[in-house]
Length: 298
Ligand SMILES: [Zn+2]
Image (cartoon, rainbow, N blue to C red):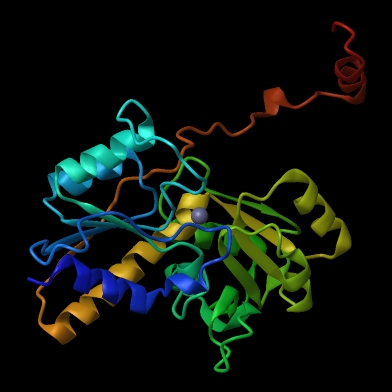
């Protein structure tokens, strides 16, 4: 059974902390790393370090929880157990579970979060959307430019993505001509609405990401015929957990550690319900619409 410090060193080799963004908070959040007696035989991978996941890590008997999202991103002055984050810390420490975060250093890694997303969608990765200047091989970077297994209409690609990503209340929404043929698609796991310029420069027919807000999406649609696909943030990043667990399995096999890795199936997307608009909810005609916009009773 490897020491916790050895497993943490392996995680740091996969996702070096210095490759995280300046504003990010990656690395080990809690854990008795300096103690050679702290050993690891089970590891759980998850997207969010929330209480449900901490409880799952304890129930599985793990000694290490690896999450994509940080627990603390800004300075904190308390880990009191009556705060939700403090409770997570208490739960983990009380049961001897360390927490390690790989966030933006996992986004830009090779393979990274968007490779896992592309893999879940059976897309062929061509190159990073925003290459990492410090990588001469040109494989690291944010987002990926990909090809679908065959050219697909946007409507088909939307169904394709919804059928392959983890189930969430949101599903996948799309913007654009449903009959547009998609030959190149850019993907970015997590919130990707700051990358429209790069997506257009890449010549992609479609862009799949999460958290697309009204104004950036609306402006992107006005600029070009680029089709947009918006999935739940959780759904675009969860595939990384499986990829990351497989990467650690490989390290474990190489060292003969015999680690048992688990990937959480708990959906921690904050949205839990969805109702499609019905025809009855549509303004029946222009006069009714005018009444609504002027606030006059109708
Ligand atoms: Zn994220």
